[in-house]
Length: 412
Image (cartoon, rainbow, N blue to C red):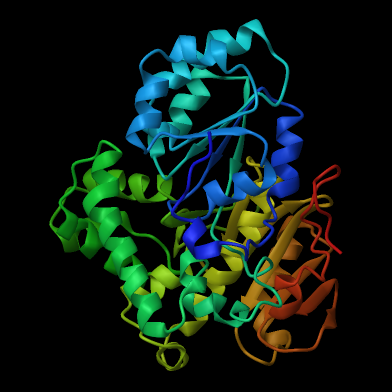
């Protein structure tokens, strides 16, 4: 059985290969079940249809498919023993319970793929029901790498990465789509996750988070501004993080003789949603926004964190900051240990800009560090510090040491 996903009318024959393709095949060679999860409209259905064209696919958002599978999940799985995709699996949670005895009776890899939209409960349920039997793969919206060389690839920063956005022609159409996406999220998606949060409260919280993008997260301060208990706001943040809307980047802790910041940094994961929440209407508005450097920082953080986590879902991603103010925007774990990365939007970088980076390298005894910036030239500042243009990182022409041995795609 084939189904038509909403993704198709946006991508059609212009399907773009995804970086996760090799990783999905690798997981299917290892586990009986793979869960591909990510935000709604990030292209999961289209991706799997192109990678696994011969698999039978059922869309549980469609009433007939959900009734067919849900009437007798045990009997259905017995009759469909392998090479089956279940889309929007969070809509039929009992299917996960039925999968366990089926898998235990036959542990051969590559039997089922589950697709789950942004439901915080789906990961927890799958982990509990199918522990040791299931592999996990997160699919994000288009990365800058995936859009390289495309006509609208240059719009990735301002408009974000959701596939439908890049099929639309005008800024007005794209803004309308992003507005509708946010409205659907607060009005329909959140209740479907089992949460009862007034939509207006969630809109206000999202707007506040957008204005704090790239800054330290202070949950108590947010709670006071919203007139809510701190634990209520913390629960809302858990929801938004589980739904792939925000990223809370945790600080790196080390046994050094300095006081380190303990609060996480907050980012809106998609730059297009960030800019809509900030009511920026065009790239010209972004160019004069006083905190556009924070927007660029979030773009780079998301690109590199998604790349690291795709190769290893448990890959540590963090930042470094001391109470004295010395900071490194991103710390990733690569093949050769920790990789400290400073992010600068400007066209120039000199030794004064990297004092935090050098301090971090000294404290953690790291021999190599990077500055990713908005200029065009690649050069060294000595002492193991390499300055790399963002365009080369986005095109994956620089080895940052993030890929792991045996990963599906090594840096060029």
